[in-house]
Image (cartoon, rainbow, N blue to C red; front, side, top):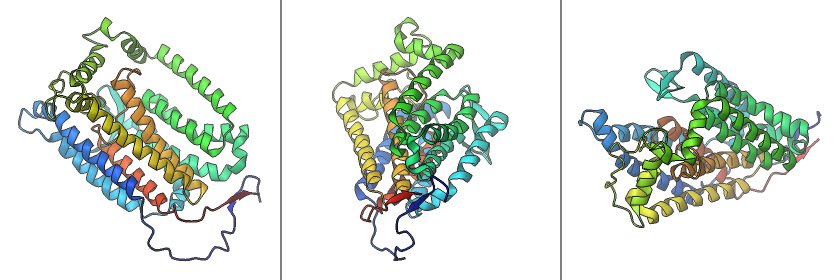
Length: 390
């Protein structure tokens, strides 16, 4: 057999028993549904003023309706994916990966521009971001490569060049789209997955240093990115332009106090805070629910993420472990970056808050991905399958 080929010990001798009574992890499912429910409730509050303005004061639920439809699609996908064996996804890794690259490249040709960014494709009236699919494709491919590389992932040839080549296949089209936030997000998730896969820490540190240099160069040559950093450091210097959004976000957070102004009583959402129903929805949460409500929501996110990692650790095979850890890390990194931006701990990245921010593609994809984690959770009572590389 070729070096690095991964087999599962005793896989041919394992009896083909139809397993019954295997349930998804109920705590994880409840936490996902709670976050979705709270997210939809807060989206309505944060978006109804904008919705009325956009529809000539005829409809206050425009954004909630669209998000609700995508939530329903996502829940169906979550249920469906929770019943698909994880090894099915292993077989689909290459087709999904290559398909996502084609979609990313097609954006450059037939993509639609929204809010100054050309990152969307419109098919039969349905608008979606290929970058959301690309995130899943990268995670799926890394999980597949982990099982193929086995212990060789510690070597530079596999752990760096192998994973790095797969990552660049996604990042290059994103760079052509000038999608810095997605590049940064996927880079962070990739580092975590490479560590789980066994890549030597010294290579990860070197990669992190290289990524830092790339970001600095990118910011230097891309003026709008540099403006974001300046606005982050000194928003008060340009309160009417580059620093406006950050200052309005901080006003919303500060005015919420300990217990908030009350649900639906935010003042900043009345067209003072830009993207109050999207990237900056957590500022409205803080204004209406106060520090106590914001902390409770953060606790929900933390509990879901920790439970997701617990599921990954108890998966029945290495592929499932790496796949689940990647999907959970994606939610974790998005959450941390969004909260950091809203509170001005980090410069603006354009990354949404999972389950809360308006965005149908992201919500449906996130729920579908959680369905995959739920299926992996069905394996938690099985004997761990040991892998050998020959």
